[in-house]
Length: 370
Image (cartoon, rainbow, N blue to C red; front, side, top):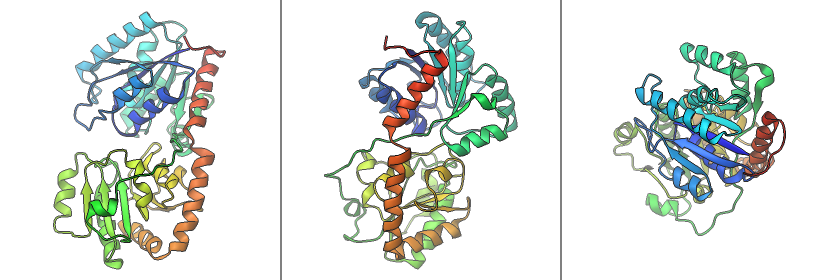
């Protein structure tokens, strides 16, 4: 079975999502169309090499985030040509622009099945109107969390019988021989360490996270706060944390999953999500998570495995962090439940099998690799 993926958002969780699919859905021949970089945003430069190592046929086609960019017209022609030449069984669009181009291009070849994974549903009215129209030519819409599926239903994007939920997943591997985070932060062993791994963007609520951490630092002055990530809000982070000795910002840590187990508390206060990876990695590493109660986040944890706080509420987030820092017994309880939840729900091997099964379902019968 051949699947043609279309991905403009070659960054963050969307790039990882497609990389995971081509790596673990091994019964499928994957062709990925993506730009060399994401203009106007951060680019995951490791994604394309990783896809090629996994065996994917990666085609570089210029695409842009702006729906009115002329490059997207050229990209639509290029992808439609690939559909005609390669005759894929399924065209799978990812995120907004990739989803539009994939579905319009799939119409070039009669009988080609089309799937769209939003990886974060935009609620602006013009976008909703467009997506309702495109949903009519989409065989399946794949939500990556139950709350994202609920949002699609509420916005009336897609017929209910065409909506499916397949969560994001992670590799359940243990890590050892890791760099020492406390040493990197210049703090003594045993220092309480609160961390976040995120793209520095408005979506991730970095402007809420920093005040929450500063409030928590007043209550637990010996704690240290570590932000790992890069993005457009980097200058704001530098300005707001200037002179704060209890804070470290690392723009990147190679294979950050290896070091998460060294945190005492993980926090992510996003404004919206599809299904974020970082909380899952933290939970698998045995670190309790404090998350904003938004789409995607609220599906990563439940009351037994993490803490949800209202979005935009730095005070409640700070209180939750302080409680966890002061109660090692509660941290252990959430840690155990979090790891079990990841094993049960978010093992990438199970997720890849679900996606492969969906491809087989929409094409009508299982097909071998070709």
